[in-house]
Length: 96
Image (cartoon, rainbow, N blue to C red; front, side):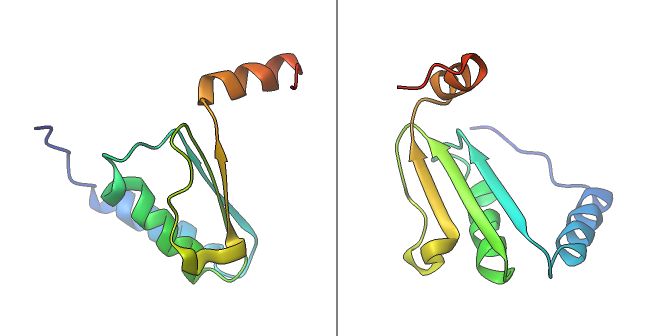
């Protein structure tokens, strides 16, 4: 079992300031290749921010597909793809 370090007070304050400063602006939250083992670290905080911030949008790219809560509605978009393949296509411009 992995033991994750606790966030430092400084990092928590930076995160809170970031959210506060952007609470009235457009925010794009990107979840790139986030697995099912990290819900409390990345996924749940992103869902919460997308739900709370009025002009936030969540874009997730994951090989397993969409798992965002229904209440995000049009604020959430999911791309089911292998991230390494998607990035490779993006770099070369070879779209299918």
